[in-house]
Amino acid sequence: MSTLTKPNHIGRKISRIRELQDMKQEALAYALGVSQQSISIMENSETIDDEKLQAIAKILGVSAEAIKNFSEEAILNNIQNNYEGSVINAGPTVNHQCSFNPLDKVVELYERLVLAEKEKVEYLEKLLKGK
Image 1 (cartoon, rainbow, N blue to C red):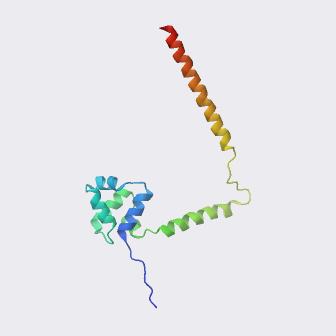
Image 2: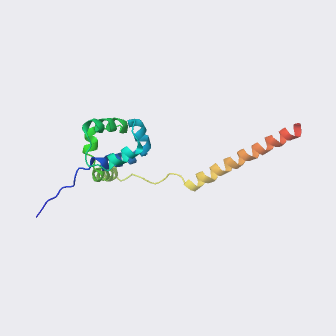
Image 3: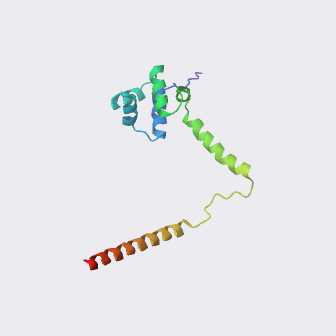
């Protein structure tokens, strides 16, 4: 029986961290002073030299160790545990629902927008009558 471990694909980890930060390859490439194609090649590589990794980590605002140890499963597990923990530890009076009706807020906003448009029309009509 073989116990194969997942390869530590640094390029994929960089790609995922970059995507989580809503950063495009072009932006990372510009910050590194390389082409977008270079970033694409780098993200498809299993290994990256330490100097490049340090530079990328600095741009992404994380440590090189964070990139090496990045695990999406760990992040999802952490999010799930924090959510469940907040419900368990907060006691029975936790209310995760809105204390207002979102539809009422939309109607209120719409009414304010309509009023603002009416005021604009009145102002413009007054300007036209003045000429």
